Length: 306
Image 1 (cartoon, helix red, strand yellow):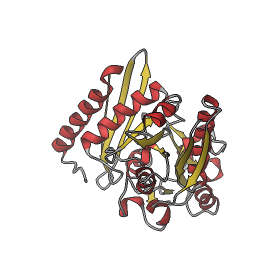
Image 2: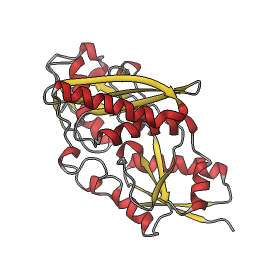
Image 3: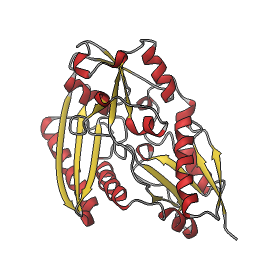
Image 4: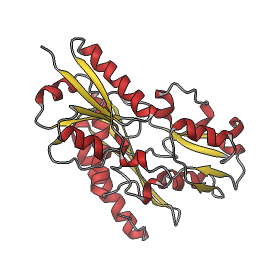
């Protein structure tokens, strides 16, 4: 008799859609299993009138889902990896990472202009310190204002002219089937993505071997290796989303290439480094680049806001 699995997700359209897409991958591998999706609202869903950095940053979108797994109300949860803190609660494990979606940031501009056609003193909607400090390099005169709400709400605010441009993750737009103008993509070398951007993490109980085995069947090894490098960097620096921090790993020929950034969006200082290592040393690479970037930040007097 195959198990019925209870799958926890946030109620937003994007979270629910990416959960459905992930469950379809599992069904294809395990046609005899049953899956029931349960929507659980999180603190991050409840507070929509404040910037994320003002009420807890990372973790506000996952805690309630994690509690549901620990209490046995769900077998596993599907998260956007960039919402998941670097340290797991006791008893839980990130068991699998399906193939990563496009990790890039997208600058959507009213009237379909490109970034070069934007006024120098334009208003750009984003609350992300990482995006602010990197886009300010491209548009030094830009004014940044916070942007919350689901994707359709954000797109509507752009259409209504509340902003000249807004920044979104390509992954979310793609998962919802939205078209993205080729001019809108920000190259990863100019705007290093958030740690885990575009990737999904599936979290379950550490002692639930049956569920772990099920989830591992849709794990993508390259995605997992890149994620391990990025998250080792994040854990060593000790950052959430309160200050500019980014990392992006790619895998080629058993080698992981990792690009990282750290900045201060109040002083507009920014540091970027990249290096590579064998796939087996992905986590050591993340740690090494974190130590290098911390030393450089100390030298330049960039305060790392904990």
